[in-house]
Structures are given as C-alpha cells and as structure tokens.
Length: 153
Image (cartoon, rainbow, N blue to C red; front, side):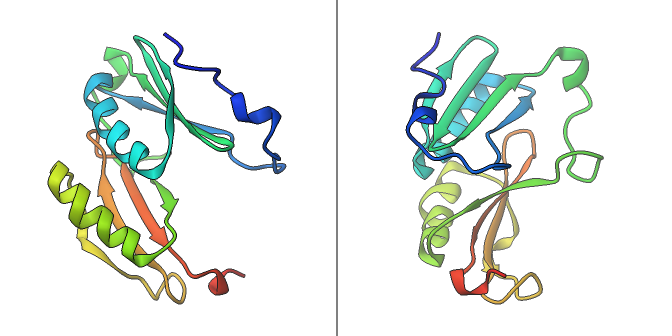
C-alpha cells in the first residue's frame, strides 16, 4: 500500500547534482526493523511514504530511506560492518543537545544497542565533532553527528 506520492517534493525542492536521492537497506525482519526505523526516522522528521508487504519507505526533503525484506537465502549470513559494503550511515543533528536527548530520552528507553560508551567528542575526526553511534536490529551501525558549521572545509 502506498501511503502517499513517493516523490511529492521533487517538483518543488531544488535538487543538487550528485546528492544522495535514496538509500535502500535490506533487513532480515521487516516488521522488527520497521518498528525501530519508524521511531528513529519519525523523531528525525521523516514521514512514511510507502508501506508494502516487502518494502517500507520514509522521506524527508530530497532524501528517502527504504527497508526491503531480504530473501531468506541472503538474510542467513547477517550484516557486519567490517565486510565489504556499507560501514555505517550518519545523520547530522543541529546540536550536541539533540544528540544527548536522542541518547537519554529515546535510545536508552527503546533499549537500542549503543556503541563506544554513548555520545562523545571525536577530535581525531575534526574540531568539534560530537557523535553517538548505535545499531539497528540487524546491527547496521548508525551515527548521530553534530559538527559546528565553522569546521567544514
């Protein structure tokens, strides 16, 4: 079932050549992953645009994220970020407070596996780099990051 037009904003938002249009994530259990991503992406302001038996999608501005039920023969191996392919996805947040709120008010309450001891600064990446790493139900690593604008090259 389609919740709305898959690309309603495309006609009105300015596209930037080369920007990421969408990400599609194969998951081992669509129902379980959908619950997790609905909470997380909903909190970020994404809205659900597709709700089908094998595919669920969310959209915010020019960007969409889709979950796809993996076929049984492919889902058996599971995901590990050290294998060839995706390592992690990072979502920019507007402040350190937003990251701290995500951690304290949501991820801990949702019992999400948080990595590396929770939110902290990573000066080895760049000045002011503040991040929180955590995993989805298939152990795909996600990152909430805030970098002050002045640190971008």
